[in-house]
Image (tube, rainbow, N blue to C red; front, side, top):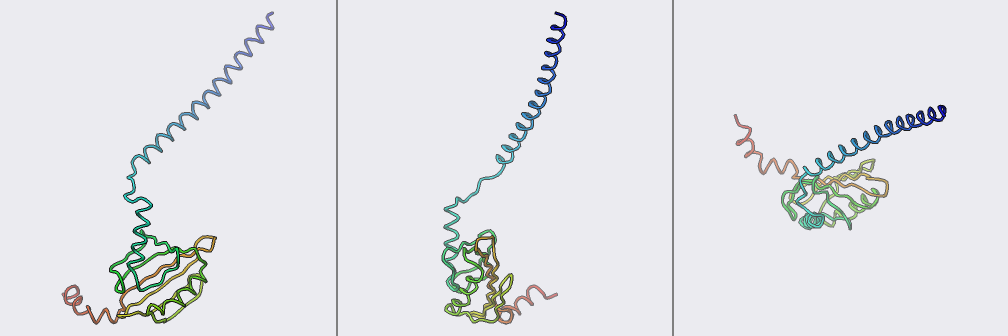
Length: 185
């Protein structure tokens, strides 16, 4: 009888020790989980909601591409509004456009080479490489530099189009004014 009591008491102590150790792990896990949840709610609760819905952003992208009528765009071109800057519109805009296209780099390069002359751009240089570069002169002494790079693994390309006044023409039109207003001592 004494052996049975000793065995029963030692079994109870053993289970109590396992329960306490297991409880510490459970309590630790629940503590980490609750702190993580609180931190997640804090971080997401403090972020400001976007002012644009995805449909509003699509309208801005479509509107931006329709404002520029002196460049061709591949079908389903998507402009990255946050990484683009456009001043003006029509055939007198200046700035940079970052466009994502679901075509491979070679096809995008060939598209611009074939179609830019239809928009009164004259080829100056073209370079094929990891990043292909096309340089064109347009009406009113404007320069277009188009950089095309592969993006992702699924025949996608990033197209960076920079359009600005040709420096000599810019210098002739506003050079004296800038020198007098900003560079004079």
